[in-house]
Image (cartoon, rainbow, N blue to C red; front, side, top):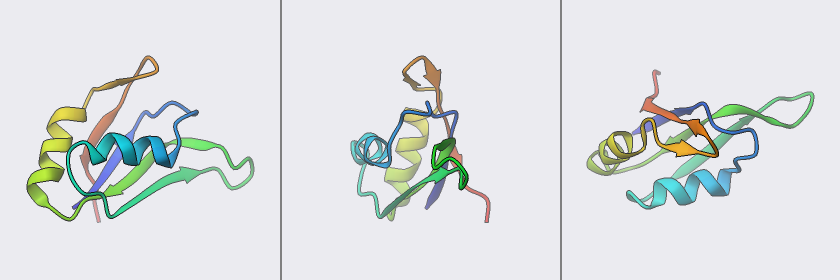
Length: 79
């Protein structure tokens, strides 16, 4: 399942996101979206988890989870 993670602090790295989601199951891929001009985070990422149960658990556990005073939003990504 591909998940969309929004409202990330600009200082969050792909490794940070991967570690956070790995607590809920296997992470196949993690892509932090960067601004092409500045190479800085745009504040959102995509996480792919192969197990649907683990992905749903991550959504339920991490949606509105606080990271550096930001409440992240996690949902199923639209195709």
